[in-house]
Image (tube, rainbow over the protein chains, first blue to last red):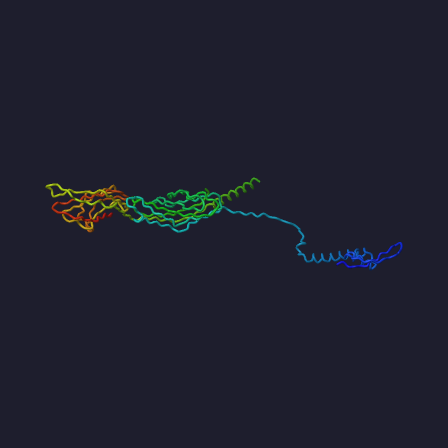
Length: 213
Length: 166
């Protein structure tokens, strides 16, 4: 709320003075007070500036003292080096389910048919590769088997299953077009024996290989 | 300078070879396949009733009747000395004769064989020297004959068993 002041106005020529009241703003109050004390209005301002600067410098000194020391660290030099990272082509292959055993008995035979067959789908093939287009082949260690052992990749989660084939010592495609991924498929073995071939036993070691297509 | 470049090229080449080697992986699995001795024989069904209703005047032998409507099939891998034997659950009364004739491509058919008195303890051979393999849809022939002197015979059912054995 503006204060009410009494102002004295003097005429230099007549030296007559009059007193009047008016509501002053804060700035006008300062001026009025200064006038009232008989001092120049410029004098307090001219002395206030250095005082303000002094306070400012004090504050700034405290401010800089509070800043972390490292902010004022000097850079005396710099260096750099190169880091080389390499991810080699990695391919992994695993068979789950253990050994497979077939036993052709009378229960698997139809009278009048020479061919006797029995299937096994108890094992799975698991793979993973970070390389481009790959394929998986299969081969047997048995050079002269008595009976035929066929293999088919069923329901592969990646890639394309090749047609069912008879295992031999020559690697034959089992899965094609495997990209950078991991996947599984069921290994469906089918043993085919002819009654005319008689009885016997074949022991196979099947080797699966994942390689570039 | 050339030597350095050559060395660098050699190192790069070995690097590629190593990467290719790691790109291939293998896994193995054991698979055992055993084929045991197998004997299998089956028949296609039952023959029709064998009914004698004719004869020749002046002859005790009535007119025989036959049935070739059924077949048998076999599969065996045991060997080449396998044979088929036949027997009935009970022998026929004297004066009545039942013969069987089994065709065969894998073995030797013994032609018409009298099985009238062949029971479980006295089975008779009908096919011998059957080779390993299969023989499908081979004809079974029955011939039933009777003597007039034996009289009539009410309907009698016999169970005939074919056995594949060595």
